[in-house]
Length: 413
Image (cartoon, rainbow, N blue to C red):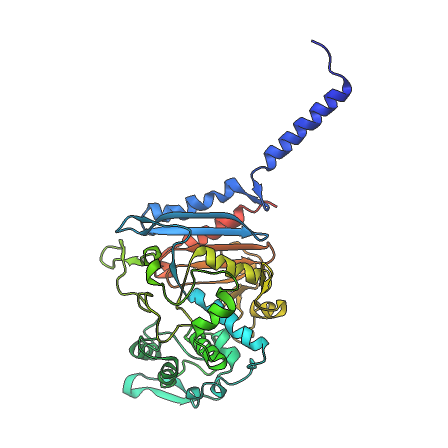
């Protein structure tokens, strides 16, 4: 066999090295290992396989590119309909960042100041009482020592509540159901004013209907319904074609069913009594705290706008400094939240990753929804993760921690 010349040998060595380099990097997309990303299906999918979740979907994006999106299981088990990328789901409290963005658009226009008392714009919320002791006819209250400021509503330091516990005040929330059907925003605020605050404004963090009040503030200041304002200023500009406060009839077949655990045996069953109704008609009071339905792809576009500091594909929704303000921790040291986490405007913000039981970067932010929807944005890694299923309660399944672990362990560059 003829000997190869030194030049040919060098060329072959270069080509083989280049080939090996290409092969070794062929499974890296935007610094994420695709084989490791595939673990998301294993780690999230196991909850579908063991039937604690009926269906789930997951999306990961980095550097402005979707690097992973996967659907698992069913959106409707009873009719054997699969979970799909355009499946519409109830995002409940993941509505809050959207309502916040709507309000911040008005803030940028000078429509209000963060330090303004909310009663300046919603006079029903004047002269509120604060819970002291007792319950029922024996409940003792005292006057609020100061007003609820608009910033208190964003931070959930207003003193309002949600009715999620069996405390004396929450029992009143359950009875009145501030967001009940048939009541408009003005009537809802009047009913809310009858309920005592759980603490003096600005002194503690308590998850509450505060963002519903922000939603009504948007209506008062804009002269539009919250849904119309969001459609015009957020959803339509961002091409979020399947997002709104109700699902039109022509899209009902894409709406996932809601599931919960049977209290008798723990089995996952269809939930027939849905919080906030069935989302198939436009509600009289559009809940800024929990009324949005959307798809995982639509919500990604909203999240990418935030990660891009207010802009997506040449369309600007907010200024960069406004997004920075929204996604910064605003809680004073005297108002504790969760170890390692602070609170921005309707979102939690990681302040000390070392104190968390999950992987994180300092400054990452996001929120979750009642039906176990979840999103997190990591500006340090230029990363977005979204998980979506339809299971209540949200703490009834650990899939979110599994999703987060699977996403971060796939980061290799």
